Amino acid sequence: MTVSEGMDMAAPKWITLRSQWLGQQLRDLREANDLLLKDVAEYLQRDPGTVSRFESGGYPIRRPDLFALLDLYGVADGHRREALLKLSQEVWQKGWWDGYAGEVVGWLIDYVWLESRAREIRTFDTTLLPGLLQTEAYARAVIAAADFDVDVEQRTRWLELRMARQGILNGDAPPRLSAIIDEGVLRRQVGSAGCMATQLRHLAGCAVQSNIEVRVLPFSAGAHASPTGAFRILKVEDPFPEVAYADTPKGAVYIESPDTHRLVRIYDELRKLALTCEESAELISATAEELSR
Image (tube, rainbow, N blue to C red; front, side, top):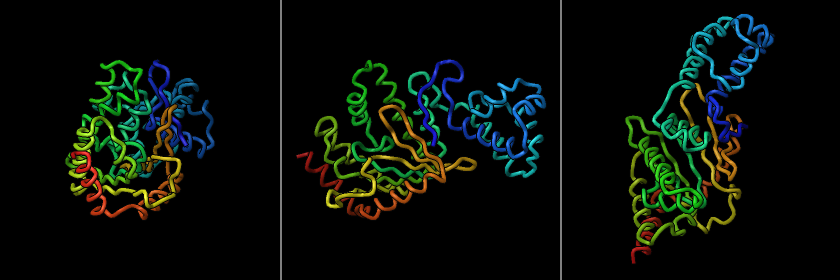
């Protein structure tokens, strides 16, 4: 399990998940070859502390050093070499979300990066709708309530980030989004009645897209497999592992496969209790109508 939170502002600003993944694989390769940090440092003509930071993710390794280590560790398999080189490229690559890096904690940038690389996203929500399906007015009300001690300008930037994230659902190769939403989320009025009605109509519209599935977990389902609350499971393209994510007041918790199996089973149990897509759409539309009266 990896817990990522905002870190010291010295470069790098935080140890990203992709840096940690690459570092872990380099450490595993070194140990499999019975080499010490000082042995690798001597081969690279670097300080042992630098090699240690490569492995911790504290300082991402540069491509020439990675090539040298792959040779030293005897990584001859073409697919394995390509996967590690691709991961190294991701570590250094900048994305549109990096424009917000100075304004949000590092774990959120990690999550946005994961979203951008995901082939499939499964979400379970108990209090609010998932950010990818929020209208601007709903998201503005959510952010204002949650970040009550932040100035308006900062909240506006966070709103821009949330809206920009939704672009992945309409790209050339959008991820498959499966959302299970507790009925209480539909009943909880965020913003005005009109704001909430518009949000629910938007949710119903999203649900008809071929890559989006929305199911409601009704009150009648009673006790269920996730009493501790919301979570996400993201299936990311190779060479990255499947990742589960849960938000907490102190930051994000990331769980990597194979430890995600338990949450996958929980999600499947929730899906069994949820309404069908058709039943869910009817409930969403009916709730929107109630708010519009």
